[in-house]
Length: 362
Image 1 (spheres, rainbow, N blue to C red):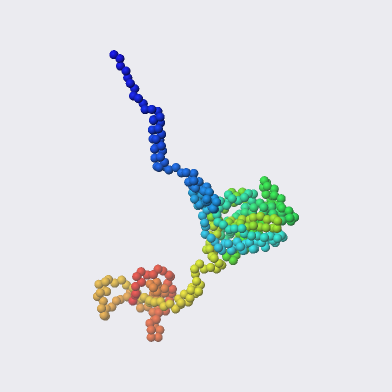
Image 2: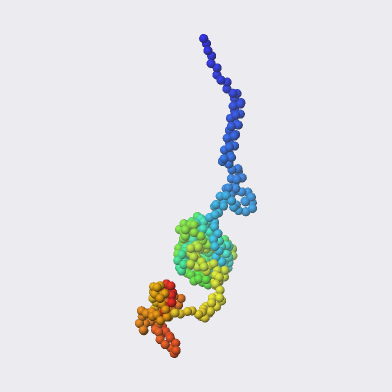
C-alpha cells in the first residue's frame, strides 16, 4: 500500500512581494505621522541658515537666537558717554604735548559686552594695561593695539614723517617699547581722572602691563563691561586704544552715571523741597505735660463720680514728662508764670519708640 504526501501550494512570489511592500509603506506612513521628520528648509531655519534672514539682516531664529541670548542689553549710562567725550577733547591736547605732533583723537563707539567675549576678541599682538580706580577699589583695562604701539615708538624716537612705522611681527616687545607705551598709558589715565572730576573725583593708578590677555583678567568672564574704542591719528600714523570698565567698577557711581545731565535730581524738585521745609516751621503740634500714669481696673473707673479722689504716685516737686505724639521728649519742672501754670525744661530725654497706647496722663 503506497501513500503520497502533498505539500501545500505557496502563493506566487510576485504577489508576496507586493503584499510586503504595501505593509512596509503603511508602517512607514504610520511612523512618520507619529514621529515627524524635518525637511531641509526646517533644518536650515533651526540652525540659523535661513536665506531670507541672510539677505535681509541678522538671523533671529533657531540656535542663532539661543547663541545671541548671551548678548543681553545692559542699561545705558548717559553721563558716562559725556565723560568719554570730555576724555577725547582732553586727550587730544595731552597727546599733542606728549608727542610734539599733530594728534587727533576720536571715539568710534561705546558698547556693552561680556568681559570674557572681549578678551577673546582682542587682536594680538597688543599691550594690555591694568589700572586701579583707587576710590572705587576696582580695576579697569586699557588695550593698545600693535599699530598704535609702533606709531608711538616711531614718533617718540624721532621717526620721519611720511614713512610708515616698521613693524616687526613674531617677537616680544622690547623694554624700550614697553617703557614708551607705559608713559602713554600714564597720560591716558591722568586725562581719564580729569574727565571724571566734574562728576566724581577718582584716581586711576597704573598697575601692570601685560601681553597675554589671560593675565589681564580683572573680572569674571560672564560679567558685563563698558567698552570705549578710541582712534588716534597722527597724520599718516596712528592706531587704536580701547578702554574697558566693568560695570562692577562703575557701581559706586552708577546713580551719577544714570543722569541725563549734570546735577539731575532723579525726580526731586528742589523748589518744592524748600517750600515744604519752610511750611514745616508753621505746623502746629500738640505737646502734653504728663505728671503720672496709672492702670486702673475698669470697676474703679465706673465707680468714679464727682468728688472722687485719684491719688498720684509722685511727690509735690516731681518732674513731668513732655510728650509729642506719644514720644517722650523732655523732663520739666512745674511752676507758675504770671497767672498760668508753666513748665521749665530740665533735660532732654533720649529718643525712643513711642510709648504704647500714647494715652493721656493726669
